[in-house]
Image (cartoon, rainbow, N blue to C red; front, side, top):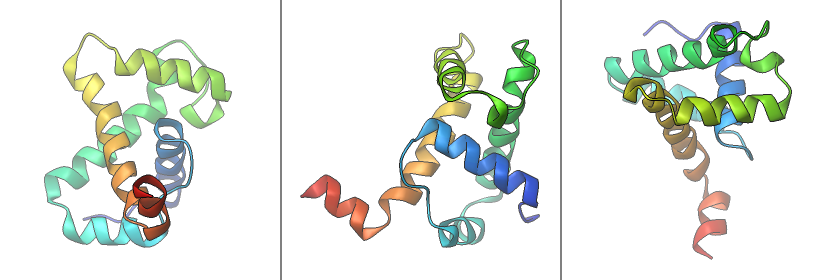
Length: 115
């Protein structure tokens, strides 16, 4: 797999924070994912990050996802998550699911939800 470039890492982190507020996945999660995930999943995640990053431009906003105010970011993600096309809805779900795997693999997060 081609490693995440510095700007893709920033985009990935913004997209992850937008779909799953709270603690971010630890950096070692992304390294492990790059090693363990199938090539199709790695490609899909990268494509999803690009789509979310540039989605504001496709909706008439002159900013990338990270340049939007938080409320606008949330509204855009809600629209994308309810989009009529399954593929668009799946992009949001995929990034959210991968982010949740990263967050909830950490013992403090698991303890917080299991008690």
